[in-house]
Image (cartoon, rainbow, N blue to C red; front, side, top):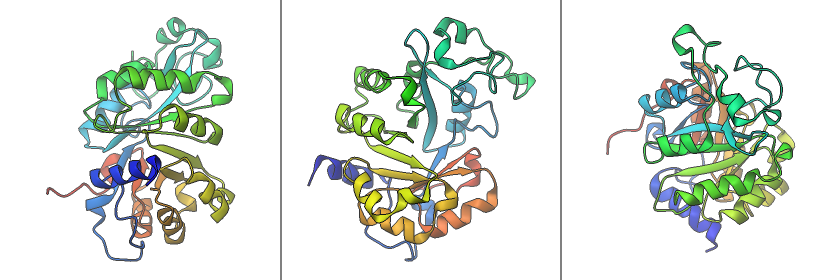
Length: 276
């Protein structure tokens, strides 16, 4: 068995992926297997990609918090979704054109509500240090074409904390940039990799075969998910997490399709695991 498939076997043993050998049409109890991922933290309840949102995700018993990683002008890793500062902070312009010191002076919470005034843009290292061992962390690398060394820096931060070892904290690294994930696979061969897509052509048999050579997850837009796609992904020994759920009625079709994880702004919308 290859190292990549060994990693999937480890995920199976931890309950991160359900029974990938059974088809999604078989009966199953979704509360036993579906992983809840707090999208940018519990971003329906707190400002996205802030420590407040991540703590809320943990409080709501999410299996993972999902974070977005970019790089500052002076080469530091920060957690923010957009390539610009305008939407979620009181700053303007591109993340890549500002130093960490400049970004840390910004308010990343007041747009969401008065109680969050003063929330800061966290650094990647702060999030790792605060939440490793408390919850899983789904790390998305954003706009890697702007940041030619981001893969090496992310890998270094993870290795520094021994989080690249299977016995340690559960992490997954994902991106829409497939080449970036191939690079992560080489830098961190024991860390599960996910490919993100909203393009139906990326779910062809040929593309799934290609993804299976380096990825453990295919994570598509929920609008692309059905039981056939789930079966195709599972047949290649990969897991599938769908994004982004923002309405309760969007949950059941994903459960019926047999997904392994639901990425949602509202972690309380998804079924909780039963006590063993």
